[in-house]
Image 1: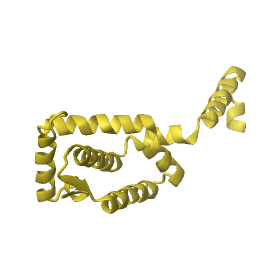
Image 2: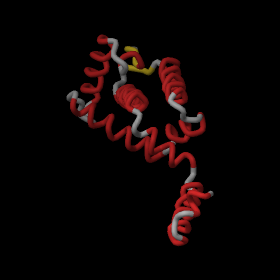
Image 3: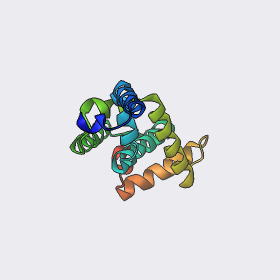
Length: 144
């Protein structure tokens, strides 16, 4: 307290207000700002989202649901190993705004690979190529 006491009264008041405001910010909001910076987590979620779009659009491809679940659990564990709590990670993954952000990136990347939203054949072509390559996306999919 002696360090704070050496500041002028108005500065102490402002510091106290800042500390109080920071304590009032919900933990998921703080975590979301940090987790959005975690490249491995975000890339994993984007791959899952891309695979999901492909399997929902292409009638000849389905999901490897167990593999997708295991991938999410792996991503959660990696985030927790970086110091994020299970609640922070779950809140981030389930946040509707984060889901929209990830889906938007996934759709951009699909388009970059030649996928046309209203043409299922383009989804099938990419999906089969990803399965054949054994990519992160392909591991989440299977041909029917």
